[in-house]
Image 1: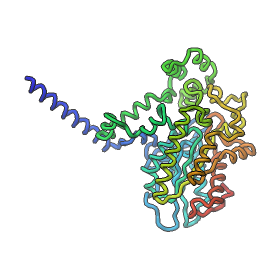
Image 2 (image 1 turned 180 degrees about the horizontal axis):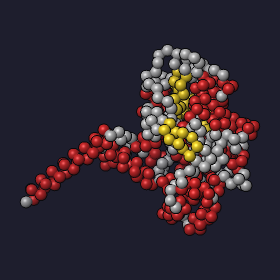
Image 3 (image 1 turned 180 degrees about the vertical axis):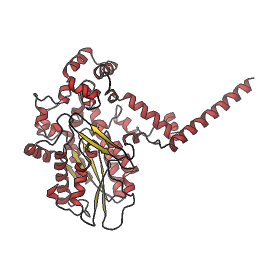
Image 4 (image 1 turned 30 degrees about the vertical axis):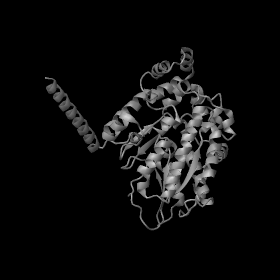
Length: 415
């Protein structure tokens, strides 16, 4: 009897494992990704209206799920130059039409008849440097680029720790023990489960329904005192809360003051041991990316994109009540005129690694003071004028530094 029972259990286990293999195989056939980071891509050939309380635009993606036109992976051999651009929502172009994104403007500036220069936009909203690296070496290199432009936003340091420490970041995709085995055996199923878990844990999922109540629930789970929760509820604008519930405003701005009030201080000041760990993780990742690109014979350059508090004085105006300030996130006036520790660290790293580096802060400060309107005041992303200013600064930098040397400029002053 015991033998029969043991045989039955063994057979059941084998059938169960075969069933799991079949499910994973079918997920692969159906197009489910084997990498969890692929969730950050959009659907292939998507065309939909994005509506926000400040702007609306059409999001159109290519067959790979990126906001760029369809082009063959194989690059034409003659008079053709390709630069892959990595980054987050500022590179993707949140808030503006595709033609207004700075990468599109750079293409117009540098291309000549018969000698196109393609700035292939692989920017994805919500991405962080870990994703930049993965997408670059899984997707970007398929386009046979001559160069790579890595655009780092001011919050990328904060995003380096998707968990609690740089050690966990380093292990994020190198899982040990049972998890690693499961990921190796059933990659599609593992990625699907991981995506569902991340979506559940992310407070951004609470942009519909009773926003205040649900965020307060998360705050209590994180042992945040009731007084702070009450003060946060009283501070934030009902109009913005309603917009977040409709999906027309970024709710993460509103809940950051309660759940992560050190968001920008951590990112810009690198002012805690954890922030230092994040910096070391970022530095290691950048070194790894640059070394691999050099090994492949590709030029590389890095651009720093500042947050609006570093160049837009109106974002500090107490009367206008910027949503970040309103929610309770720590914002420092000194960021508007001084160089942050993050900027200094990036500049020092670039010098030691001999990587061309452009900090857009001074240029945006000048343009914002001269003309204004570079950024959507509530959302914080660039307007068309902001992208124009960025394209002009980057184009001039590429030209004067003789970067991506085979790309010849055309009418840089008309960015």
